[in-house]
Image (cartoon, rainbow, N blue to C red; front, side, top):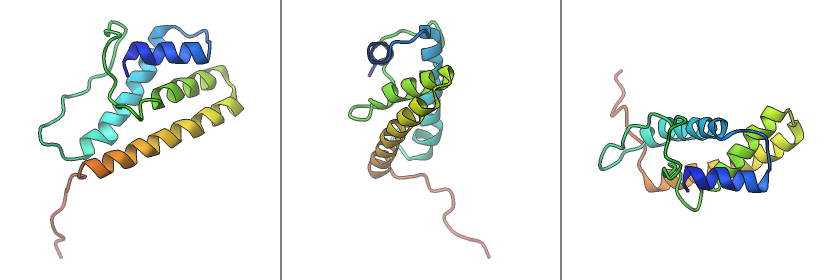
Length: 125
C-alpha cells in the first residue's frame, strides 16, 4: 500500500478534519515502530535499508513497509489515531481492536518467515 492509498482509504471510510501532514506523521510513526520492533529484530540475507521516517515532502507514491495482505493495518491505525484525537473513546477502542488484530497477524507471519536475531549463543556460569 502506498501513502496516498492509505490516506484516501481512511478519508473515504472515515471523513475527518485532519490534514495530510498529520496522517503522514501517523503513518511514519507506525512504520517506525514496524522497522524498529519487527524488521530490525529479525535476520535478513541483506541488511534492510534504514528507515528515517516520512516528512511532509514525502512522495505520496512511497510504498509503506507492511505488505499485502496485512496492509489494511494502515486504515485501522489512521482511524484509531483520528478517534483518539477527537476524544471518541468508544470508537477508539473498536478501531484499536481491529488494528491489534492486524498487528498480531502481521507479527506472526513475519516471525514465521524470518528468524529472530540470536544475541546470545551460550550462558556463562
